[in-house]
Structure formats: structure tokens, C-alpha cells
Amino acid sequence: MTRAQGHLVDEAATEALGAALQRHQPARGCVHLIGDLGAGKTTLVRGWLRAAGHAGAVRSPTYTLIEPYEQLGTPVFHLDLYRLADPEELEFIGLRDWVDAGLLLVEWPARGAGVLPRPGLSVSLAAAGSGRDVSVECHSDDWPAAAQLIQAME
Ligand SMILES: Nc1ncnc2c1ncn2[C@@H]1O[C@H](COP(=O)(O)OP(=O)(O)OP(=O)(O)O)[C@@H](O)[C@H]1O
Ligand SMILES: [Mg+2]
Image 1 (tube, rainbow, N blue to C red):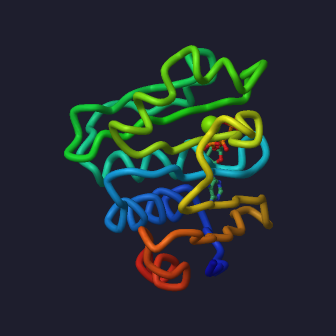
Image 2 (spheres, rainbow, N blue to C red):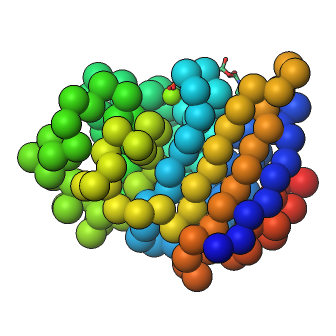
């Protein structure tokens, strides 16, 4: 496991990190996005999806749990598990199919514990001054070392 930390001064910096991560993304796997309400998880996903070629809006799928972006070169599935009542619900709504089909970007991953795949990459965001502190952890050889990912956005 490798870990690196950085600071994101504003919303654009959070989007830039998302774009940098997209450039290194594997075709399959699970990314855990950790942080409180308003930490910037969806903002990071927005930068990620824009870099992947998605031109439309990106919102947290808080009520639908999942928003698929299957038209992209690598299909991306954006999950927000904030309102997930029971991790097993994920199996009923087709988690296995998404895992096989593309890359998962997951907000509130702890709510899916036991059912959600382990992360190849974890990104933790926390408010710090008027910006956000970020910690990136790479758990899999599918991703470059964390320090390289942090540098990639600069
Ligand atoms: N680095 C940053 N510095 C300051 N503000 C930021 C930064 N990154 C994102 N924001 C702002 O934080 C706010 C909340 O962001 P966002 O919706 O992405 O949070 P979230 O973590 O997805 O929250 P939720 O858990 O409710 O889905 C937005 O107004 C966004 O512009
Ligand atoms: Mg969100």
C-alpha cells in the first residue's frame, strides 16, 4: 500500500485531481471516496467524468444509489451509498454486473461494507481552511504509486 497527501485549494483543484486519477484508471476496479457531507466527493467525480469525455451534468445519485456512464471508453458507475439501508441491497440492484462491466466510483463506501468490493484506490477528503486536505491510498498494482497520482494533478 502507498499513501500520499496533498491540499486542494478550491473546487477546481478537486476537479483537477479527479481528472488526473482518470488518466491512470484501470478498466475494472473499485474506488472508495471518503469524507463528510460536502467534502468534495462528487466534485472529484465530476472532474473524473469530464476527463473521460462526459459532457453533461454530474450529481450525487443519492436517491437512485447508482448513475451509470456506460458510453465512455471505460464504463464508469458512480455510486452514492449514503441512503443505503442494508449492504445486501446492492446485490439485489445488480452490483455484480457493474463490477464486471467497468470501474466503480463510490461515495459513502462504508455503508456497503461486506458487499462492496475492496478498493484498489481510496481517496479521503476533509475540510481544511477554505479548501480540502486529501489523502490518496493505493492498495493495488492496478494503480501507480500514490505519490505519482498526487503529482499528476500538479
Ligand atoms: N478543494 C475545495 N475547496 C473548497 N470547496 C470545495 C473544494 N472541493 C469541492 N468544494 C465544494 O464543496 C461543496 C460540496 O462538494 P460535493 O457536493 O462534491 O461534496 P460531497 O462530498 O459529494 O457531499 P455529499 O456527501 O453530500 O454527497 C461544493 O460546493 C464544492 O464546490
Ligand atoms: Mg456527493
